Length: 532
Image 1: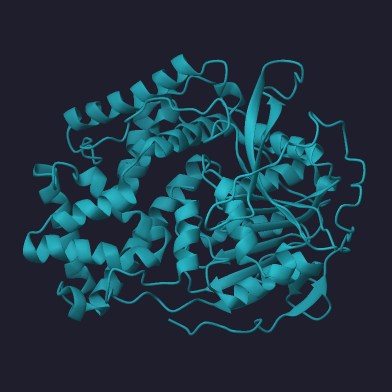
Image 2: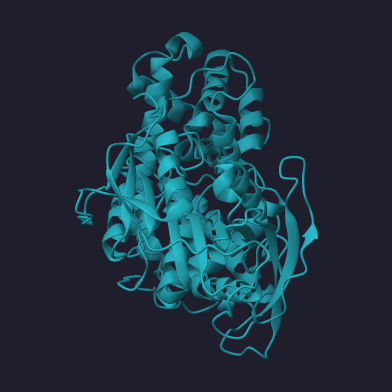
């Protein structure tokens, strides 16, 4: 791995737009459109980690086309600005869809340079259907309880068992939330963001989104380009592939990323004693999977749960030492306890996870069309399985409720934007959850945007995670609009990166149970979650 960069990587920079500086406490400019409600009633809700957090709620229409119709409630959080220079609200989103953003506000405010964070009201929110927003969806509690059928439908009986699960989930959603599901989608959430903007009295918002949050931000910018001041997108969803192709492309990238983990394990044979040949280690991993089909570890970890446990390693390499320890203990010593512990830490789904998954399916099934013919799903995924067996079928069943979803899909949003102020995009070249090509596509579609690339990086969510080079670009943009450009003339080739940062060194085997990588990186990835 290349060494961490301590300075800005050599790219020319220009300023994007004008810094809007308003003295703290001054009257905000009249917002575009009438607010749905008065200024939210912010109350203290600080934690030990984020003592400045405040919380509030906001009532918005379920259907924004009928503002006087049924109302729902959004949960909000905020770290208020403290500087005399005020740059407005900075809305943050952790992805998903289905991720809670309340704690992310505290993380972002505390991770940015203090002088930058102090100029913004950093605002998190639970999107409609999520967490503390009301109603919060939970279609089928315990949907992921172990032990589930093997994800690979090698027999008709296994396929039928998996189909029964996903059909039951879709039916339960339709029965419990028939009046809500048509409005759980990205466009509706983007309109909620505009309601937040109005409620806090801002003419324009700043926005910072990770993962799915990059698509949400691009959709908001398409709806309201004149209401966007600054836009930061980290780990960029391909906006032209939502959502089936996004997931199929992930499968191939997850295979490569899993093999990166196996290669790392081979490099550290002295710690794990699994051998120095990645191919033999891969064979041992699949042999472990086969054994768990017959005898789940601790009565909890079957083949599907094993995949759930190791998938987070494709998102964040800080988990690799823990996963390798559990793998080695099972293979070398026949000790399943560390594997069960890893499952409980990384793979198990609790009530919050049930809620997140319910919103995930509601959004992905509503945002765009999926095949309704199961034969098409079967043929597509078996063909892909030949190339990428690690996660193809697990991911297929995760999304399969969309084949039976009780609401009709919308048309995907074309986020092509020539009216938007210059945006700043971040992308790791080897990110599996949002492959690199998607960032290039978004860079091309968002005219005037700048793309910062972490060369050789494989983590998903890369800013505010310990890479100084990336974070300095982020801070400069939020401070005064400075953007990297590929040449001194300020023009940008939208098929290329405007700045390149080296990736951080990889993790080391654990010498203790302490975290093996930066605490900030571990905290961020705990907030971002998986599948988003």
